[in-house]
Amino acid sequence: MQDIKQTVIELMDAAAARGLAEFELEVDDFKLKLKMGGSAAAVPASVPVVAAVPVAAAPAAVSATPAAASTVSAPAPAAQGVPEGRTVEAPLVGIFYAAPAPEEPPFIEVGQTVKKGDTLFIIEAMKTMNEIAAPCDGRISHILAQSGDMVEYGQVVVVMEEES
Image 1 (cartoon, one colour):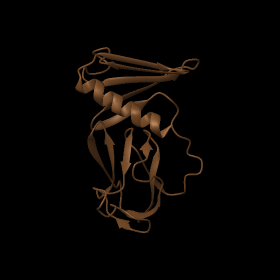
Image 2: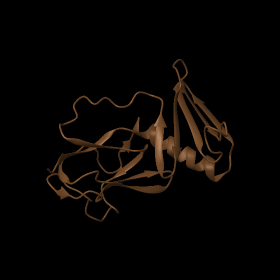
Image 3: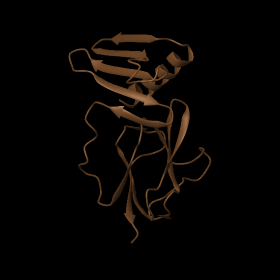
Image 4: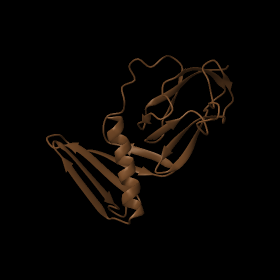
């Protein structure tokens, strides 16, 4: 699934770079359709709209913009197994990075105290790096993703214990 998600992001970038209005791919029981634009009232013309479905299933659509939250019509990831505390969710679909560069130390570590507004991690979407900030003062209790992981909109990535 990680490979499929990465491929979809790469296809979106390639389609946008080439100015394609539409792209469709079908392999075995998997069908992917990228369509640039949509209705003017619903989606700006430059925003790609993606639908990826097994041929026999209902479509799941993703609409993404470089620095804004994505909308996923598929169910959000289950909150089962998420540790107690203040959760920080991915505000968009993309690739999680714990550090500003591979050779740099991570922004946060378990047990570290952070202040509201401190950068917790980065999500790369369509070649744009989006810094995700701490929503409150607190201590990091869990980091639920590793650098290079694909994260979904609404997926819990960090759990914090809020300071009183």
